[in-house]
Image 1 (cartoon, rainbow, N blue to C red):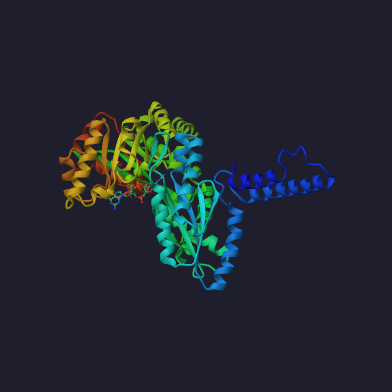
Image 2 (image 1 turned 90 degrees about the horizontal axis):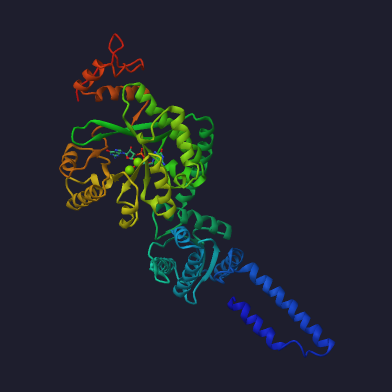
Amino acid sequence: MNPILSVLKNHFGQLCPGHAQCPSLQQRLSLLEQEREFQRMQAEYLASHDALTGLPNRNLFRQHAIECMEAAREEHQPLALMFLDLDNFKMVNDTLGHVAGDALLVEVSHRMRGILGGEGFLARLGGDEFGVLLRGGGVGMFFELAHAMIDVIKDVYDFGGQRVSTIGCSIGMAVYPDDGEDVSELLRHADAAIYESKRAGKNRVTRFHPDMHRRLVRRSQLEEQLREVLRTGEGLSLALQPKVRMKDEALTGFEALARWRIPGQGAVSPMEFIPLAEETGLIVPLTHFILREAIWRIAEFERWGWPELSMAINISPRQFSRPDLESELLRALEEFRVNSGQIELEITESTLLEGNKVIDRMHALSHLGFRLGIDDFGTGFSSLSYIKRLPADTLKIDRAFVTELEHDRDDRMLVQAIVGIAEHFGMDVVAEGVETSQQRDILREMHCGLGQGYLWSRPIEGEVALADYLQRSFTVADYLQRSFTGEIEPINTGIATDGEGNPMPMPC
Ligand code: C2E
Ligand code: MG
Ligand code: MG
């Protein structure tokens, strides 16, 4: 039983031990009155506290924030309002079950309480979100306590021998009076700050800054525009970046990269609109568009005389966990008569953090013949022991390791290690972001099989440029042989052909 409730119960229990011998009407009425009072207090308590942790809930937090702000105003003291959100909590719930999830939340509340001591006011706002109010001290102290909370929360948890070390947290802070003049404003601004913390990676505390507000406004405008674009399809397209075999630089396929152009405003980076689409659920219609375009494109390549090209499609975490992903893929394959083996679905390590369901899904897709790639390998937080359980076909080495290959010994070691891992587990390995011939040569020496990067081509947009690129990718021998056997027809795009409509090959 909750500690406060048990104190109340004891109190009333002592007033009438055993209830049986309460004699007079007067006394009975008084007991009834007290019982009612107890029920009222109980209801009040339940309405303002979280049943699991016994902490104040969101209502009480807000009410208390108003009182604290009044006091801070009178005493000319700063007041910090913080939101704290756990990272990877869902994974514990999914993999170890809800009982462990509940135990983790209780343990987190104890650890936070331990840090705050008598200072501050702690509440559970719902799910894996907590709120903290701190008064007095100064901004330096607020940051110190926030960092101390991060440190204790990311420490290992032990559930009957099952150790969990992947929990972290993000904190957003707004300080009265600088960051907001009333509680609603402080709440809004702490929310904007926690959003920034989460975007920047876990285990961070971020204080509100007015730029965040501007970013949030832009975000909501972009969301509206993206919604509209997904209704009409205008402004969205795919850019295709070639993937080549390292040893002879022959084209093996493409990666499909989403592009969005707003008339009069220019291009919006996928690094901006893909996370936005993820957060708002717009990733569902967006992926629908991308899948169909990419698969249609493979069919088109076949018509152009390139029957064996692969197409890598990026699948974001939320989309990967949707139950209808398979059926959507299969429908598009059937419609455009394309083989599942030509499609490689790229997921990032953060998707793997979602737990066992992801691995099951990978197995299901793999059985259907799709290839699976781990994108940006080495930049996430996944544990390496995962690798042996993954039905992945490809590891993509993140650009971050390739950029400094010529100068950085550590990066060379890391890339060599990744190539070794891929080789050991029978996976292909692709180096991303190859820009110079020196990087290519180093990667070749390391036996990295495939490459992608500006050295060979930037992502290509538009029919004309694609046809042009493909024509230039034929080796003369290739072209002569394939045209001789009647395997290829000229690419009919109205460009880059000779006077008689034949493609003009260029030696590589
Ligand atoms: P990614 O999947 O790792 O894609 C590679 C990114 O590196 C692309 O950026 C590409 O243009 C860029 N890149 C390739 N070669 C080079 C190089 O040599 N040098 C440099 N500096 N950059 C190079 P882009 O197109 O801006 O896409 C960024 C990220 O956005 C992608 O990273 C991917 O995570 C995401 N994204 C793009 N399209 C989609 C999509 O259709 N669906 C999903 N879910 N995510 C997408
Ligand atoms: Mg990718
Ligand atoms: Mg990548």
